[in-house]
Length: 147
Image (cartoon, rainbow, N blue to C red; front, side, top):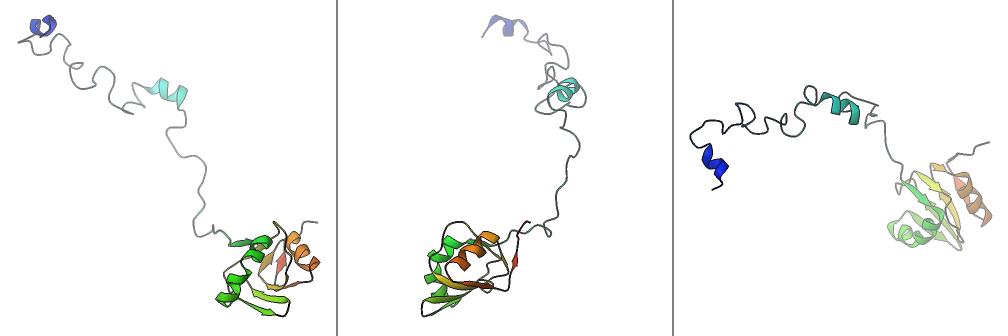
């Protein structure tokens, strides 16, 4: 046993006073204790946005992600769409109903080589050009052309 501990045996505070001998007393508490009192300057200097609310959060019922499909994915998944009953093959032209398949919008990433008559609620301008370039058509849509 070190001599300092031995020296303070029988004394209530071991030479530290009343408060500092208790748990985390001299340092102002554990963790974030005292950020508005003893550690206020540190809070204002290094973490000035600690208290209060900032910005806003949109209600979840107003935000919804659209189910999208690119034209290259349409070509890759045409066999799956036919087997699921969302597409039919008439000769060299495929009739595809993406709205009943749960796809909200058709985007124009990639290229397509099959002729397809596509039914979709919304389509990008580049996807429309690519489908029409190979001899297909699109029905029941709104384009997002920016003019």
